[in-house]
Length: 330
View 1 (cartoon, helix red, strand yellow):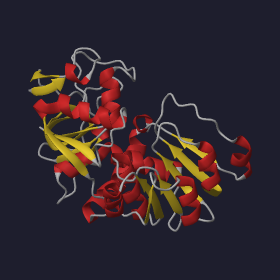
View 2 (tube, helix red, strand yellow; view 1 turned 120 degrees about the vertical axis):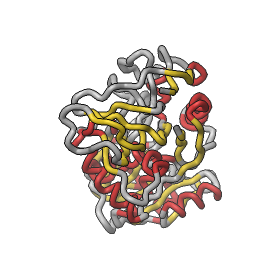
View 3 (cartoon, rainbow, N blue to C red; view 1 turned 45 degrees about the horizontal axis):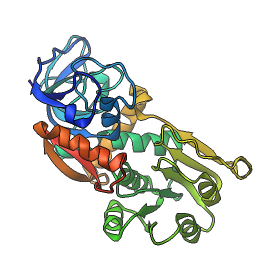
View 4 (cartoon, rainbow, N blue to C red; view 1 turned 90 degrees about the vertical axis):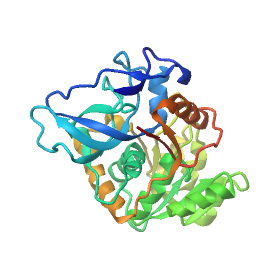
């Protein structure tokens, strides 16, 4: 099979496009003929060695996929050959990734693709969708009628959080760096957009939500926690999902007096059952159109190195070159 792979952790240009043996599905696994994969920041961190994990060699990166079950291993009961599926959580913790023509995936990490939903949408919405759902539902327990502030509402995760928060019935305020990105955020369903280069986020949030926001979803590496706590409502919740090496100061006094909660999580550490619960809602919202993953760029499999370089430029160099997801068509 054709695949994009590395033989040891390294920069994007060490990705090789070539032939690898087609995997054989083991017990409980489905061999998926991959139609579309997607690129996430974690893919580049693992491939580059920034996040150290035990990797097979050669290593195929990639968390997300959508495609068709080609064959199944012993003990598979949930799927059969010919089923359209999507999934995530591959390329991590010793598992091979999805930037290949075939991937052997445990049935516990796969979900049926709803009729009428494209492989591009299913793959693009996989990791970011599960991440957003875990943060909003399992962690923050966002309720209908509450107000959420999403920092970065035009990015891959941010635009997903906006859409899912609206699907849950919340009022959504978000931030954008320019009017073009504000349009993207509004298309995702944002009720209010703060242009943070023109107006201070804290001041604008207090103007738009005088009683404070119930949930603050943070996508930046180095948030101003004093600003956040000042904008939270009583018993407000802050969700963090970025900035592994960040050590910002937390204003303990105002934080505990307001009864606030700080919630951090890593999507790939969620159990199969927790991720399946998220996927069930995502499938319902994908089918209804409430969730429409935004695709910013599409690459072919032999262009994987360029796709990874673009993702790194957006997330590490903060070039603001992306407003949505990168997908790779196999």
